[in-house]
View 1 (cartoon, one colour):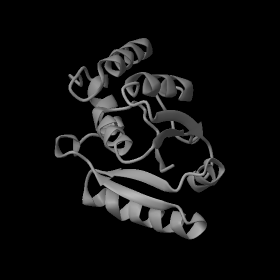
View 2 (tube, helix red, strand yellow; view 1 turned 120 degrees about the vertical axis):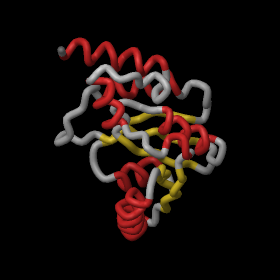
View 3 (tube, one colour; view 1 turned 30 degrees about the horizontal axis):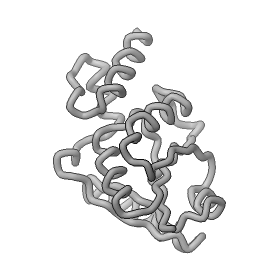
Length: 160
């Protein structure tokens, strides 16, 4: 079985993430979308909320599973017998950082990294940017699945 993991914070999941998930699902028998837990990072949604949204917006791909992990990603890969990490690349600046991570992960565990260039229509898209625009009342409806947009707007309203 060809298995891959697509890690991220997904705070919130965007249409760019879904593009990479869908394309990965066509290449692998199973894709695990792993919500990485970073206790030092301030998030808008809890891990459980992010996982719930991810499960709902990935239902169309039966070979996609959602999980969470705290620690080294390569340890997750070892524990779950996953040989490939999928990373979406938006720009050259992403590549510089991700290449170092890929080389470290390969050295530590033999896990390969597949770099998937993002669809150009999502090349500017980042969860942090979406949150910032939405905070100031900007229209982010074309950047997020409808369910995620609803929850984002609701969460921001709760914080006001």
